[in-house]
Length: 120
Image 1 (tube, rainbow, N blue to C red):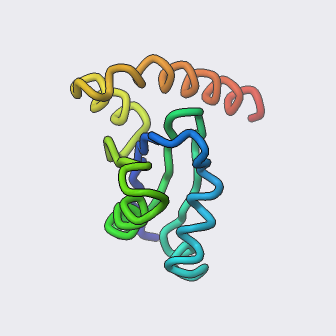
Image 2: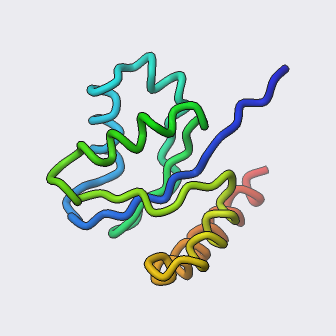
Image 3: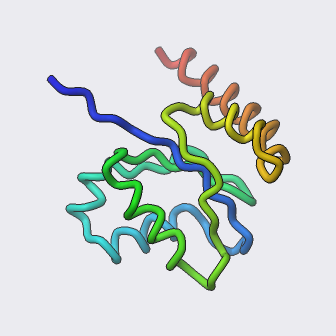
């Protein structure tokens, strides 16, 4: 069985009225339910100023185009794309715009990881 390659997309919200759920609904309306299923589209984290999506690597162009089109111009911005959450953290550390989000993402990642381990 072939493993599906996934990518984690870190999206910054400049308009705090936007939620990851509304973005997911927009993506579904724009590309359809079949494309959303093919993309394995899932919201991983949703914070006040950013959110993280997990999608198939083949669907990155669709996610990026939906990010640009959604809302007013500049409301959302794709900052980093990586193959893992740890990779997202490393990429954010290396970028000057991303350093303000690193500690928040680390903290959320650690709490989610503990919660996952406790449920097993």
